[in-house]
Length: 233
Image (tube, rainbow, N blue to C red; front, side):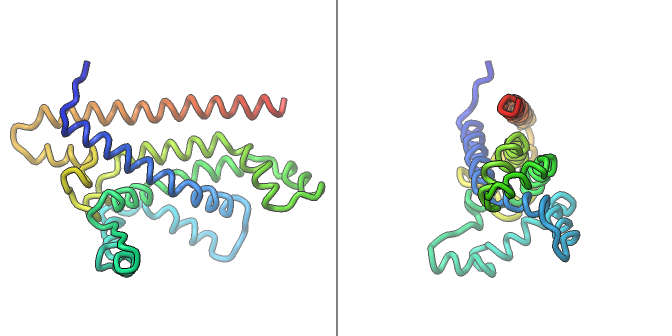
């Protein structure tokens, strides 16, 4: 049985904390953006879609540097947040959660958007003809029927957040006990001669944690699909 050292346990717990906060805070926004992209036509939609997917195509370091400029302690918004609310994101675990959430956001939105697009619009139109408003239609029809996509999107974002490195280390650096997530800790070990075994242990741990997240996402998604199918049988 794999016995974890205190440093490994700390890295795992911090990674889970960062990933959970990243997904928990971004999920409502992800659902809203996915619905808009799936159901609304507006000028500049193609450009908005391109901007939405930028974190997938630009180097993560670029995202981290932008976050540093905007949310750093002397950043455009970060300085105001620090002075007004005493809230800091740069060089803290909160910043790591923001970086992870931004990098995982496109994956979340894409999965949810595809699920919403698969919902039969005739069901939504039927509800509207029966007097339901847009909000009622969304919560009673669109949201439940796209439940499997929401679950998959959230868990894919969670798995992506666990593996986030480039934007994280650029935005919040590698502060022991504060921002040293699994990938950051692994990178640190690869820079130390003689720590090959410790690095390999973290590789195995990272793969196991990611596989567990993906396995859980598949199991939960199947259960949600069965429940939806059963309720409409």
